[in-house]
Length: 116
Length: 114
Image (cartoon, each protein chain N blue to C red):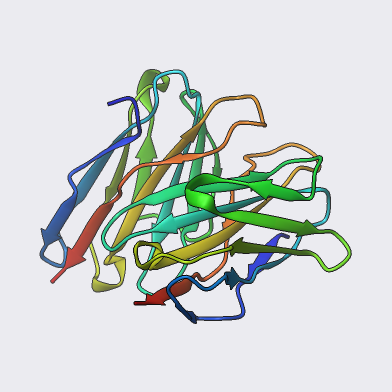
């Protein structure tokens, strides 16, 4: 079984400061990892994914994430937060062992609030 | 618009009524997923189609729920005899067969059962 934990329900950061949204995962095989962002009453927008290769993944809107296999983590980061980054962020994992639907398993989400 | 389209965007229904939602995936995507998202939670997997075949169903998908994907194009999700606990956002996602491609989500259908 695969699972994702986002330990913080909410993260508050001042505009211009760096931000980190934490994610840890559990899978039986090699993981594919994703970050999505959700604005109120909207669907999920893709930010970035880790498939293989470089542990530092760069994505949309200046976001990046670092894959750490030993710590089973995939934290989302941004060097300088914008008020417009305020939204709900979801980490998701997909197990690549064997065959199947390759469904994504999501964390509960972290609400990011960037304070002007 | 070449994204994933879901209709309607909002649906309010009385308890006990049947509702049907539609998802139009990206045309070249042969994999299609339905998820349900309740307030304060992440999306939870409901069911998966590869082309027209429904290959996997979650235990969350009770016998009141049915999904179809005729001809491997659009998909419908029907909920019969709706209950207040069915109130949620229903999300559809599609992807191409190559595993390196990401999953594209629609904007969802928000169901409110009163």
